[in-house]
Image 1: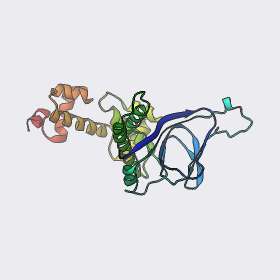
Image 2 (image 1 turned 90 degrees about the vertical axis):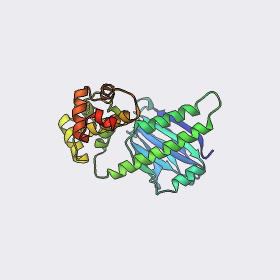
Image 3 (image 1 turned 180 degrees about the vertical axis):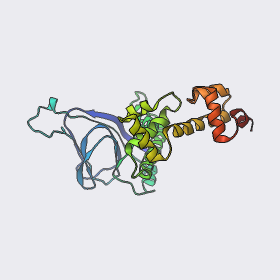
Image 4 (image 1 turned 45 degrees about the vertical axis):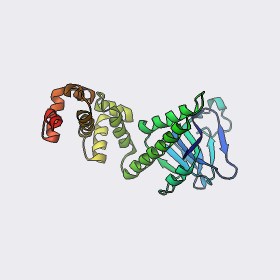
Length: 267
């Protein structure tokens, strides 16, 4: 195999917890904080790690993790200390990882917006490692490589959005993941914890288009794919791509492409 998954899981701590690596890591370690906070050794100093922080360490890096109460009060009872930290992690090695890491300079800590597409790969990798029967190492290899490429996309997306809102990225991901379902601007606002007016203005400020325009683009892209590669009726496509009615789908499609969905399918 081109990679080896040594350990992969989701961990959740409600009590103080420490990992101290005496010396340096012997494998790659990727860790995504999903809930709560902790501290980790990054670039030579202990730094606060919050939800959305992705840690990337290579063999030879020093590593120290410290899950403590945010109150940091020695007199506080541990059961009442408020300790809470959840994360996905994977420890791995292999020639493909060596080549992948060498493609670019990688930050040890970067803020990303968790995306269900690569989170589901991480979850599948965890389940594969938990199998009672013999692990399918070939499947684990492909899942790990897909995860690494997904992390690359998350990092590059966040880099391209420098100066833009982390919250706006969460809005965009919400639309991408729920485009096939009916939802309102209020649903997006509730998801990110903002008012409807602030949600509308922030999205347009960051992406130079309205939420409705972006949603239509995503749904039209889905519709084009189904027109080309499925035998679904145009009415079924309209319904399954989130348009609600064929008449609305027809109007939006013709405005975008200059022809009706039926003519587009024939062409």
